[in-house]
Length: 287
Image (cartoon, rainbow, N blue to C red):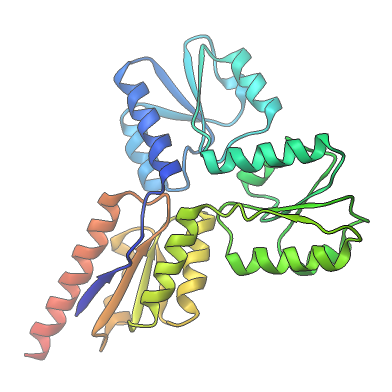
């Protein structure tokens, strides 16, 4: 059985940057606490916890001995201010792509414009973005929700950094149809997200089974699975190599592998090794 890796997979710039910032802080000693999970990968979080990184849920849980870390998804300005009051030091590990969306929303709101964001309103990234323009921002999951919005004032349309391009485009068109004024449309999907989705789409048409490695609560991993299923129905989202069922690979000659933007290389390597071992075992059984 041939195991093929997508051309783009695994840690994106923002996640790698956040992990590197925490690793650097660990090397300097002290108490390191992340406000919420630093990234959406429980296995990588467990690795960091073993090195001394703990997770807090509220800024008040930080104290004068704490180096607090703002996770890659970002937070609202109010939460950041509270954290700066509580903690001895704050490391802002917000992904620069997320920071861009925050600033775009803040600027549009200051100009008296409405902001429509294509994304999941319950996602931490979206909660943080709304905090920069709470009175002017509407988060919609898809184009169907645009009809329910009030009359829009010179709208700006942006996106959660990890959604599917098609979803963003459909939302933008729905806003254009609804608004009297021509909306400003800025595609803020992270380039790593686009690259991973394009690479997965290209590979999914060449394989008989596909594995996406990533957290089940990771938006970009879930979107990768949806992209793979477009051409390869036998696509699976797994968090670890132990979740691979050899029965799913019976008769499969080519299997594709990709990984979400929060998935570390060591997890990817474990999955590839297990797939190859399953392939070897199947070959031996045939011969």
